[in-house]
Image (cartoon, helix red, strand yellow):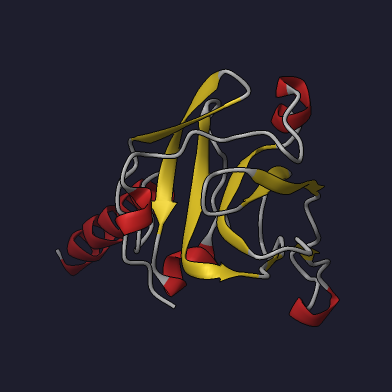
Length: 163
């Protein structure tokens, strides 16, 4: 009897883990906000807490087509990103407070064994308020580069993001 209870508990934990990998992580305010860039709409998960921004795509198995992550910061300053334990390549767009693209890059998957100090950093030389991550190749496909505008969710400037 004890075996079946333990087995059932193990299955429940495994299923909960699979559900967690496919849902917005802690610090997400919503998974159904939208942004528009290059004439295409994207459903974005808004990350406003330090924990959620640090987690980002780390450990997630995929990013569905037409979806992305929108990192919201409390202020504009220089930001750097890395691909720690990310399983898929990503495009990154650094945005100012109005949604203007300041800088873009395509971030490559790195070995999960790479120590943090050896991971490549992706940054923008200008102060950034928002950062958008989508599947690699989409920015180029849409013709989005520095100077392009991203239509951000209404009222985003009022969101209280953690430092």
